[in-house]
Image (cartoon, rainbow, N blue to C red):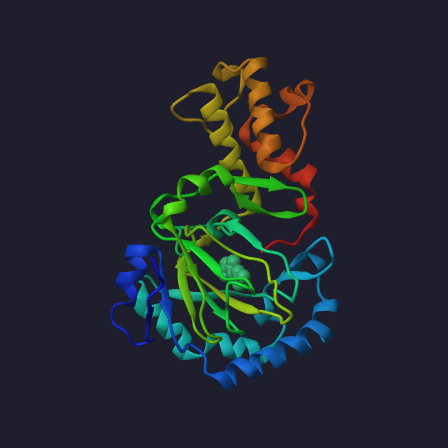
Length: 314
Ligand SMILES: O=C(O)CCC(=O)C(=O)O
């Protein structure tokens, strides 16, 4: 399968997005806008980024920037860029809800930069109802050598996939899921200024940059005007409740349901803790389980161990 790029005014954009979960669009920014945006971002990285909170950026093990977020909050020129009617209009025509700008993130993918592992946006940025889109626009021609992006067409219909969480690394889709959906994967290359709109359930990743030039991309996050933003505590509690439910084999499991009162025992608790370790990268000894016997209490402990309460999260 190959990516088919549509013109920004193509009336079929919404239909393609509903069908595949992602739609490819040509000529979103012109070469002058691309060059100007790159200049502004280069200056932003030097002058603004060092002064703002560390949790708004991620780096690889060599200290190379992998992404930085919420850029529109700190730079008026970029704020105007993302709010220009042509970009918002493009997204408005593609969906039947009312999109508003949520954030602008940048993936600098410097020469030698690491891959962005497979993920779904709604896993890390949950909103309710799940009306979340990314408008991804690379600012350098994208090639297989410098980190093409891969989308799994149709995964928007499958809901949230299990993600693996490791300390200090963004959550990634369980590799066993990727093996199963390999036949849905489409590798995308395109000129700078072209791009894609995709929904928050779309599984996607991009390769390493093996070239000697940077391959930056910007991503405008949009959410429905009437969505509510879930807190990290709510997000983790619902993931933990699912583990409690599956391991106790109960049809439903409330966030405040007591584990031992719901028929749980130490053997099941051991399985719950092993899954929490795999999914969230934290270790809770079995002897501590009774202190965190509801999903809500367990999730609070997970966040405490991850140090999330110290972060000012989006
Ligand atoms: O530009 C990239 O390499 C990754 C972009 C991405 O993951 C996103 O927009 O969500």
